Image (cartoon, rainbow, N blue to C red; front, side):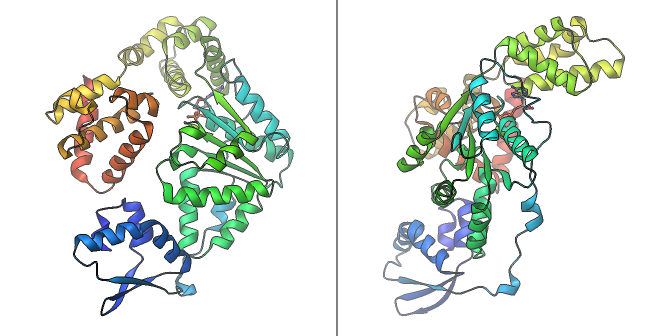
Length: 426
Ligand code: ADP
Ligand code: MG
């Protein structure tokens, strides 16, 4: 199994391969101990080609592996944290009352409202999709809050796709899948955020969708939010598409200036402050990117105003927002990132965009893609386009590779920090 460590992501290694160990070797038969049957099945299904390949590379192809399932001793098992699971994980600030409706989001808002007041009878599943910082998480919380307020005994759960997956893997490893399924099957409402995080994690996607189907068949309301459309998420199965078609896909677009102005007024009100209309327009027309940034600018201005005891007016807005607006104007573009990365690794920008997959080029290209996702608002397909028309699944794969390496590679961590600093101060 050690040989395989380099070939799979650390998460796959830790979850699936590390818990196994060699028991004995009799002739050509190698006995490997695994925690339980499900575990053995999963390894055989997903990692056998990799294992056989590793054996061959090490001239051990004559060995046959026999997985021996050993039940772990119950007493030593960590218990799942029931209390934590029961918590709703909802943020009261993300209510429908605090959500400003405009042309860019009215469809998603109406769909969310309909679902919240008519669980499992309006649209199931509801799939909310749109760019980063445009209000998807806000709407998921709003649905949860509204459903909860109209029925406080409702069983609901909000969590990200990543948390869901991790919990499932844990349940699988601890042989708690029955408890896991029971818990989800008895829910009335399941809200799963950032479902695009499942992209490229094919071995866990399957389990996720299995649970999804079970819920769906039990007519439990499911609401999903994603940065990508279902068909853009690599590995989403065909039969799931028809499930999504049976529900509703609602998108959120970037807001127009009027909506941004209304959001500024709403957010200021929540801080017990007020912003004159002309100031709100000034900010709204200058902050071009997402609503999260818009909110950040407003809060900074309100903080500056209260600290210096000044009234909020255009002059103050200008003064306070000048450095921010300048950075907004001097946006970090994929081109800037590519130039900086190319220079750093002593390559040409064309090489980053090329189809050349030699080692000295692949890693810098992956790093550049990772930085584009981290530092710009570009979508995954847009990033692919900027790298000579690569498919977004390639972009996702690259980003996953960098994220995995970052967990245990201090040299890469250093390189990336230096690059970010350089890019931000250019
Ligand atoms: P996403 O999940 O799409 O990345 P969020 O839901 O986290 O975005 O929204 C980012 C911030 O913008 C949050 O603070 C949210 O309250 C705010 N926001 C987004 N859309 C609206 C809206 N229509 N009205 C009020 N606030 C909004
Ligand atoms: Mg979100």
